[in-house]
Length: 290
Length: 269
Image (cartoon, helix red, strand yellow):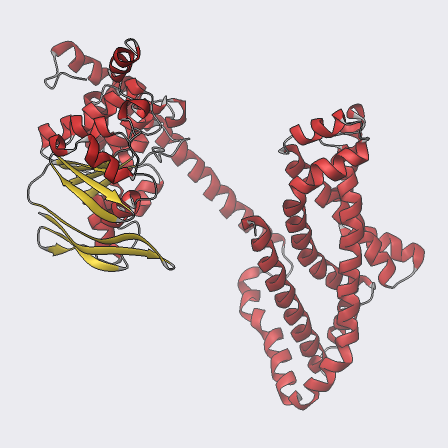
């Protein structure tokens, strides 16, 4: 380190280090090249198989991809005078969709909160039951909302309630997982302090853990609310009410009611952008700290 | 060579660097001292163009640095290496890759994304590491190294840039005295052997006195001292740090030999 001129033995030592590092570099490059080759092979072959199995065929069909939107837009443009009236007409359906999302987010978040605390190491009420609660959340997350909704619509009949239950169940599983990851990083010293005063589990969680994780939890909940607005619009397609239901009716009739479909698209798009903006603003505020 | 003309930096209504003017006519080792918040880091960050000056200009060999944009600015940055207090290496990459990051400005984005550096560069990187005495660590991850070793990797990255100026922002503030000495010796050697200009923010006076050819003292964004290290008396230091008569260098010094001095003072007392 202090010697500027490199003596013969050190010279050889450097050569050895350089050579062994070059070997490493070559091996890494070979692995990188192989990965890239396998990746492109899988992409190409997968695409070819999918295209073969596709009834219409991608290469013939993709040129017509814009035909349907063009039909909708041109018909809506012809009947543009109807648009304000239609927007007013479908506004209640939009409110129904947002209500489904809001209620299911609230219920899902509350259930998720309990599940997450019960399944976090170091915080759980019954540490032995952690795997049970974790698997329960896995199941809630694994079943798609639309499947739960279809089953519930079959039992309860169409309407917003089955959609709300379906989304709330999925939300509980998804938020529970995110919450418990945030709760794992919590500082346990305040909890220990509360235990030393004789506080019970609920008091410890409410007063010791929640204040620490509240910004994270709120941020996750807002993100979930955005997702749930989209989910509740989609569930309308299977008869769960709200904007999706109206959109399916308008589109299934084909040409003639495309002005209504356009009005619903405008409402849905506007609502999603609006809530995205609001929630991302609050989430930024929460994560950056006031 | 390097010329700063009333360089100013404002954050909102707070002035971090206030009309700093100085001139360096030949490569030398310059220490900037001052208490935290005096604007030392902001000054270095403006020199590297990590942040923009609010007013004033920076000239290097007649070229106006302070107004460079985009590619020209990155080209300047590649000639003006920076060393940070917290090393600022990529922790999960190996030491040689971190050193090779010094060549990023010269290489295509695609080649660097896939780690395709030329063989000569890889050999040069390991030679630089050897010069700094850490060639043995070459294949290890940067995060596996000690603080002193990481700082030497950062210096190696700076040398890989083949820069005209090396800026060091508190290079030894998070190191123990032994490693601090190794790092400062390395910086001094780079200056003496390669003739590169080194500008270092330092938080201990004895380091500035021992290693630098010129010392600049800053207080509240202004230059309050600019001279040779031997002109840096305790009275001047009190002025720079805005300290009272109870200020003693030995109390906070991190140099190993200060221990003897402190002990010598303590024993008779």
